[in-house]
Length: 156
Image (cartoon, rainbow, N blue to C red; front, side, top):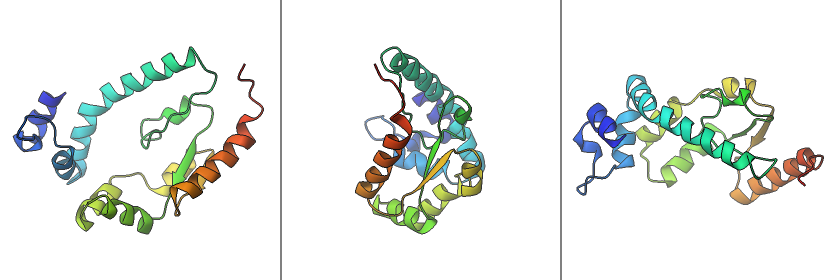
């Protein structure tokens, strides 16, 4: 896959050691819709194959499989699962979080622009958790939902 990414985006996505610089790739891939589509066409097939493999493997040993995937709806996997929970934050909070991770204002805007709109995500979700606060607050909300929805599942 590294060879295909390098062919699509150039040698500049590599570190001096010849490994992928995700930061450099991200700058190029999120620069335009065309570049993002090019990245997705290279990465997503292998990623989805691995996701399916992991789900099948997990299903052999457990009755509940949780998939934490930001692109679940983009991939239309909401059709393959029993419950889709959208974790959503305001654009202001998303921007602040991206900046805290070292992204510039422009880089953060490009990444947000590449995402589906809230209305699109909401239309394909069973539940929405608003996550404008801390991880701890999110964990509390997730635990409440888990208690409410999964207490009827027999895990034996």
